[in-house]
Length: 92
Image 1: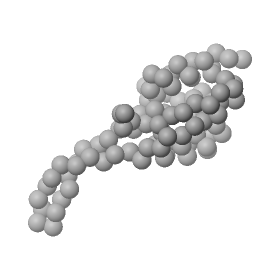
Image 2: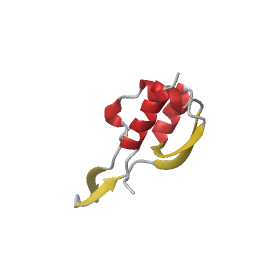
Image 3: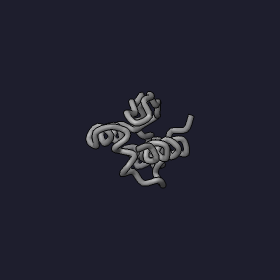
Image 4: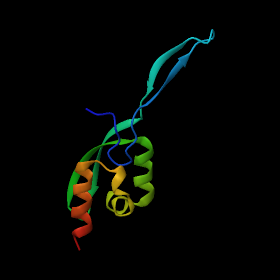
């Protein structure tokens, strides 16, 4: 499973643990991912996605998955979510 948010494209960052004596060891900063089930009103089905906590808050703010995907940029979305977006936008 990839550690990448399917809605915002957030992925792990690289950095260092720095000790008191200034020794540096490599580490990864992982995004705060959750497995969330969203309800799509236009498609009338549930969609399970791996989403960062900040993206989850943004979806709630926008008013649901359908409204979020209408305004989302395609470059940030995963391939699976791009297909869902196309089907939501094409539905009347």
